Length: 293
Ligand SMILES: Nc1ncnc2c1ncn2[C@@H]1O[C@H](COP(=O)(O)OP(=O)(O)OP(=O)(O)O)[C@@H](O)[C@H]1O
Ligand SMILES: [Mg+2]
Image: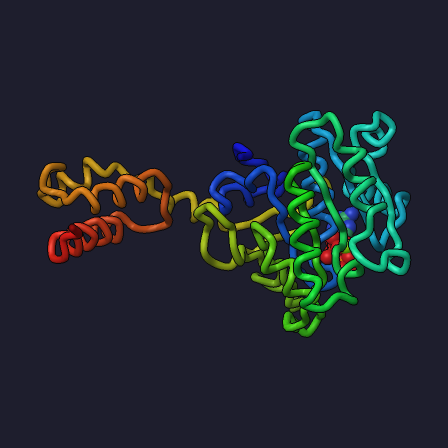
């Protein structure tokens, strides 16, 4: 079994919202309509890896290699030097030539990932590739994602239509199958909460709840606001202390309740101290009223 660690996203403020980042060997979806910053997200994710000497692979379905380099350059990011050093492999694929998740694509990623650990993989965007697929292809996408997970940690961008319609199979399949799904939104009124980010899911981990405003800034890239508030709300649970405050000693707590509360206290939560106490109290009460044999 793969031992998972955390992978930093490179997006300012995001790792806190994800409980210290993405899981390694996962496939993560960034969903958003045109101009929400999906490509910027992808580039920033890659840049984080490059700056830490990690091997990165960037597959594009809509931009030429030169376009990608120029987009990065417009932010003041020099990815060309990493391409020259072969730390970053970039390739453009044409959806018209890809009748299905084709071998060339996987071969390219596989060849580049060979002999490297913790490879960062980007597919920007996945939409042209799967837009002709129906639900029957779910297994193929599943299979492709499994191969990607063996090779490293992927960020796959997905286009949402401007009307926000997510009810098309080709949009839904990667969302169902992705380990983490991040939704970028741009209302376009040019005010606070103009651009917002929300974590739709983050498998096997806590994540911050809520809608977080972000900006796209030259040099910085995507910068998420409001993470300081989340940081303030995050509590590390000291179960022993809470039990004492509630007037329990460990021996009073039924075994089942203790097991669950111990697991609960391993992760931080976005709760007030009072809420945590209420949760602990209720679990103990439930186990006391209905003791499990
Ligand atoms: N050099 C720059 N400096 C600051 N902001 C920029 C810069 N370049 C782009 N942006 C901002 O980023 C937005 C585009 O982001 P990006 O290309 O990542 O969107 P996208 O979601 O990939 O769009 P598409 O669906 O068209 O591919 C622009 O509309 C602009 O607001
Ligand atoms: Mg783009």
